[in-house]
Amino acid sequence: MNINTNYTKILTDENLMETVQHGNSSYPFQFYYEDLSVFDFNCIEWHWHTELEFIYIESGTVTFWIGEDQFKLSEGDGIFINTKVLHRLYSPSKALIPNFVFMPSFIAACDSFIYQKYILPVISSSLSFLIFHKEVCWQARALTVMQQIISAQDSAASKELITVSLLQNLWQEIFENADIPSPEEHKDHSSSSQARLQLMMQFIHLNYSQNISLDDIAREAMVSKSTALNLFRKYLHITPVNYLINYRLKQASQLLSKTEKKIHLISSETGFHNVEYFCKIFKKRYNFTPTEYREQKHFL
Image (cartoon, rainbow, N blue to C red; front, top):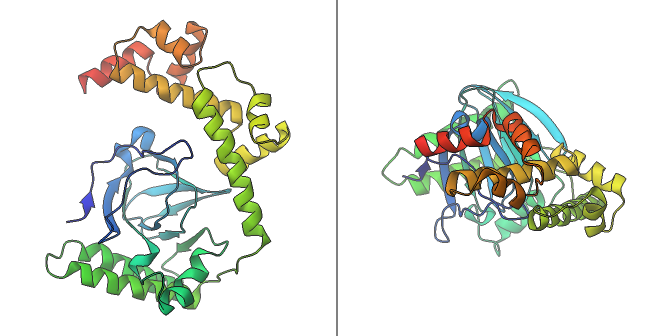
């Protein structure tokens, strides 16, 4: 069965692209039955992937950040996230979110008439996501098909055939009823903005151990400091400096759990050149001192 419930964090590269392969070349579809409460801080952090994604909220309430949008979905709602769209999920408590990701070519081959006429217009548009509420007739039908796809993953016989057939039905509902914008300058502008953002994030990921400033970060993408601030706030809802601090803390937490290095050495290696400040801000972020965090991880 293509079910995975063991993820506790999303693995990404320096551009926040997810590094895990979903499915394989012969069957590019993967189903996950996930509980947000098992992820660090009940959060699936910022990431994007080339696959399309559908998420159903089976229980709980989930806050989504998708690009510059933020909203909450509750039990019975669903969402479609387009290819290459940056997104983040959080729930204050337990939230069950069965979801499936797949390559667009899973519905129809890329060189086919079906793909060119019905799939390409959606994935090449400026549409980032679609929300499904059961109060809207066509969206209720889409939610029903999503639930059927989820249920089909428990079927031992011909589940692959059932899955692709239901996905085509789901895609038909979207294509015939959703307001799909055509490719436009907004899309190009958005792509350019995200490219600059990725350059700055990559610079941070490569140089976080050094003493870098907002000027350095902005210079890497050849933008002003105000533009750098706006891009980070627009897409990641955080300032560049706070993103840098969070990334340093993330690297420090990994060193604490995977090595026996001294606290002062980890502090220095991750760009915190004042160990007292490091311990203070680490506890604020993780609710544990570095020593307590290490002990907890070793105990687990």
